[in-house]
Image (tube, rainbow, N blue to C red):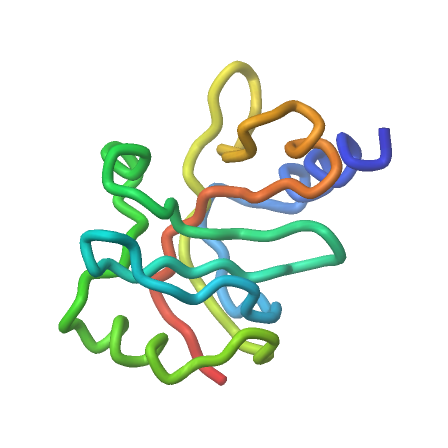
Length: 124
């Protein structure tokens, strides 16, 4: 139940889907098979915000980072474990959830949720 409360706490603290100047540490930084940037940031122990990692899943949310952009160049200089400040928007949820969680299993979504997120700014 601790994990369900974590999602509720995040939802209750949001005033819309956009956030500014949150802090976290980089957990995923890679490119997908299309060369687009994939980024994940841990915002609390076991809780992450992340882009999708493939174009099919990202069809509606548009979170993947386009190569050749300034934003892509910024993340290409980052490292796993690096502390950063970021802004962006959560993807809206489905089936009563306020934000979209991307785990493939219920257990994964409860124990270590990964919320779909579109990044707009980063600084480190």
